[in-house]
Length: 263
Image 1 (cartoon, rainbow, N blue to C red):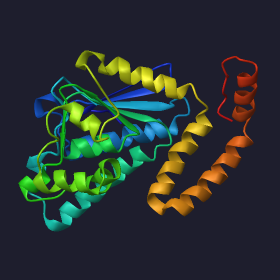
Image 2 (cartoon, rainbow, N blue to C red; image 1 turned 90 degrees about the horizontal axis):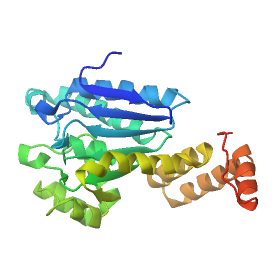
Image 3 (cartoon, helix red, strand yellow; image 1 turned 135 degrees about the horizontal axis):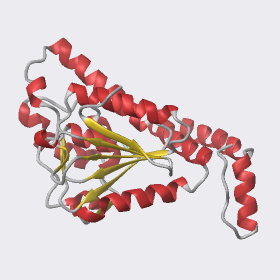
């Protein structure tokens, strides 16, 4: 489908770059943006040449500054529930892509923007980035997964502090790093290169192992420790029987770089 609200490109290294492109609206998440994100990440999932993705926002002020309030203000209860379920489905698709995803947070990530960033595998932030779930200030709660992913990342107490006050994370992006909401903070100009370098480093590893590691973490968080451990053992068995395992162990013993085939 043609995109009007996001930019999409893929390079020869197997990395897709998805940019929410509504800088005049601080990259707010309208229904149209969510629909285009759904299509983009389905393309990434279906294309074996693409092994990872970077998600960011246009400009230097906002990653995604929240939902489109003009749309939210006119929803009926039934429409609002469907609105939330649709966004949850798209963000869950990103979260369970089976390929590493990086949120390159280049500015404000508030409300739905923070929820979108939390659906990615890792989050790298520019120094000017700001994070928060301010929905209670509008008389609503997060609807795209914020009440579920935030406590998983920063703990119940810290999550409730942010969710119930509606205030942003104190100070600057360094505080978001301290509480575990982001993985690294870098200068604005270095964010694209840093995000790409980290993803390339991850993608140098065995594709099958990357996908199963992502899935194992997801299973454990959803189903609990016992089922997570059982899945881990099964996934370990699959990896141990793979061509990539044989190549990786040979390369280690021969003191050379492995050439993984994803098999």
